Length: 261
Image 1 (cartoon, helix red, strand yellow):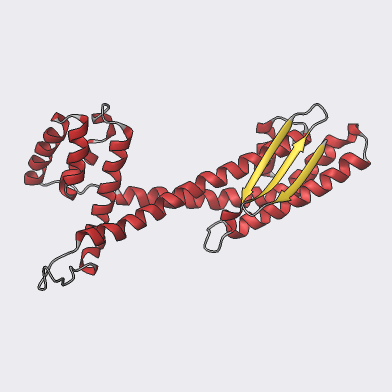
Image 2: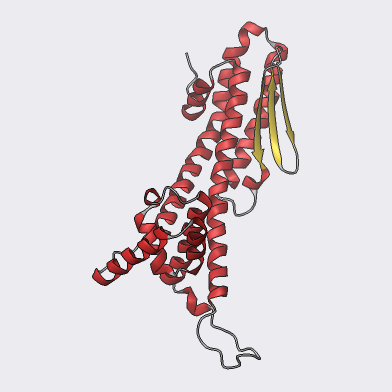
């Protein structure tokens, strides 16, 4: 059994290789430790725990006979790795819940009055009647109220619409809905130009650009959640292989701190 820990500019790596050449690999990306990351402290703790686990596990398999490995390695993982895994999962779940709630608010469609309900039915019909190309073009022209009709109807109403067009529908509605609800349009007044020295009103391109940056931040937060999950899964795989136990049992141990009997 060989357990190795190393670092690169992109990640901390822990690997385990058995004598019959079975391997497990865990990666703890450095981006999770970056300033401002909601997982900075817990990721540092996991990295340090992984390094300690690799060092102490290597000593165990060198000093003790094979028959004693499993019990000692399980206790080592439960003592050293489990607390950091538990804290990272706790923070990850809180962040995931916050992201989900924020997206739900962004995608909320205001309740329609009688007049608005009629207009939404008209918009639904207009969107549904178009070809795939026409639907894509319609989305780019649509205002927030028109897009609200599509979002309110839901993805299930349009199974024929390609994923990229539906994703664009959601993104564009999120941007325009944010501009409306946050009142950011006022922050982007049109500027005087030679062609229009007396320009007034809102520079919607600038307003949408600013709102889109916030949308990208949301997507980056979501991507970070996936990165946290992959880090937890990778470390769990290494622990399972090192301790010669089932991966689900290893996960239960790391999330409870209880060594399996």
